[in-house]
Image 1 (cartoon, helix red, strand yellow):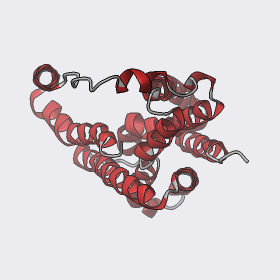
Image 2 (cartoon, one colour):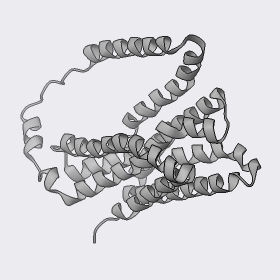
Image 3 (spheres, helix red, strand yellow):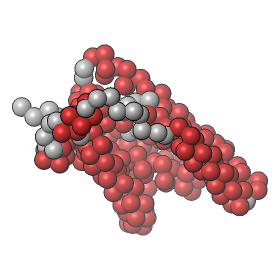
Image 4 (spheres, one colour):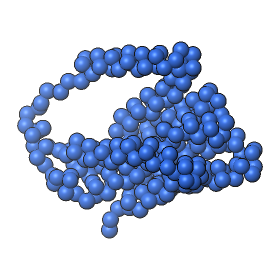
Length: 259
């Protein structure tokens, strides 16, 4: 599951490295042309490789019918909601970090692209490592709580740096580093959370459980780009990163295992 979750940061990291420079050099026609070509290539790969494996006896039907429905399992709902909450600060980094580094920190295209690529590369490495670590130690819930706490702390530190950077300009140079650390911390948990969710749902209901979690994820992808401009207008960048810290902190108790 953690290897599966490296796909999105891999694409995001490559896009952060390639697309801004391509737009500067050749315009957005080249950007969308490249995206169209890559989409066509991936459509070919899907047609070539994504086939249903042959059924072996009646095992598939039995697994589908086994276990309680995940939509009636409160633990499945809890983990799905926590996944959605942790995606709020993650989406804030992915959608507005470039604007923040350019407008607030005064970073150029290369520094901004490198920062976003570093977030995505770190997310890939941490997702694979966290899956290996929790598989060996059986500590998915404690790890998810740790990720929530570290993410809240990292965004709180980012908020503090932004608040004090106006009085201490030397802190501006550290903002990309703090942002990268916060972005990696809030992106390291995906494989572990989805594995825990799949375990709770059981082998016959994994699709339903993962779809429920992804529904909350896309709620975040919808609401965050709508909410951040309002936060910027009222509280500027400190309000954005403080809200991100609060979302990560709220997710922490949800990952507690019930008595």
